Length: 110
Image 1 (cartoon, rainbow, N blue to C red):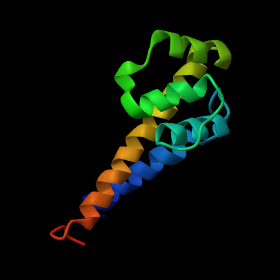
Image 2: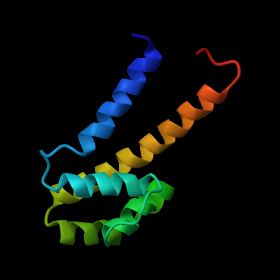
Image 3: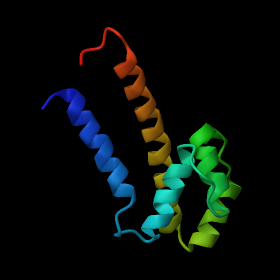
Image 4: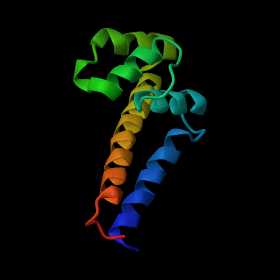
């Protein structure tokens, strides 16, 4: 297996892991938050603002945004799952964009 495909496999493993049913929060929420952080459709507040902010400029996330998610989600572990889902979604969106650029480069190996 080439490194290129190995990296793609790892990206897909991350993408899949967000939506598995073994979390404290619902898989559908984690998947929606990941999509939102990647520029996808809005989700319910307070998840929407946090996911959008993580996707656009994570350094601007405030303690208040995290606290609001913690309060609604019910625990630190649930809030952590939401934050990590948003981080994975944002990171994979950047990964996908990089892969597209590399594939479009005329001198990149096929």
